Image: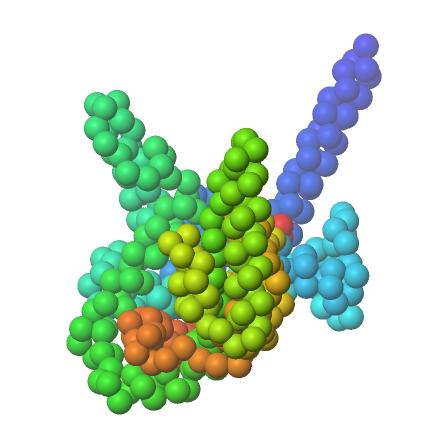
Length: 360
């Protein structure tokens, strides 16, 4: 009886030691990211500002799909139990993912540092952001309970609130820079337009046309059918005269009060929209100077004359037409360049104890 008790006791001791060994292995092989670690022990610092673990994890999730696509397109690799740690052509998915997540984390932290320097953000620690998120959701909850108006979602998710905070911070930073340092004069803005016009200001593919049309009633009776036939005879006669040199305007006068001349532009990249319009389809097939046959659409007969068929990339929008957009693009470009410069100059210190063993 004593022997049996000792054996059972020994079994429990052995089992306990095995569990402890497993736990020790897990602890050594992989960091335990507790709330304390996230708040106190950052995975990296950027110019002394911490990138906390949950910040890094956000960037990991944001880049996960892109890394999966990269390995599928380059190596034909598909997800499996070993996908993240396998080597493909010397590249390991988890290492590429960590690298991309760190780059994004550094970029975001630099933008937060800039916002802090400009007085837009006061505290850029992620733990403070999470507390602000909790406070904002609590405020929204109480406001809804009181039947007060709440704009936006009833409750923010962490990702949505981060996007909201960063978007508004960046807009405010750009506004401050434009007001003090970056506002271009007319010459600078024109230079920017000339440099970027092939990239940003190409005129969209479109066909510009002149339309001659005549209406007819919906065919609900024999009289309506006669009126429709008469309208068609008029547009046929107009078509013949136009082919012999008559202008659309002269033809409309001969048709009488029912004749109408208008001008229209049809974007050629709106395929679904144009598919529902016989006039738009006919217009897209014409070259400058060409005239269509008679087209029926929405209770009218049409003749279409192509004034201009603008191919994609064949011309640019004028500076005056895009001046306001060019100013916005100029500031965006200056900001992006400034962020790249600050990133290249940043002192990044990686906490290898947390970064190297990081796993999905």
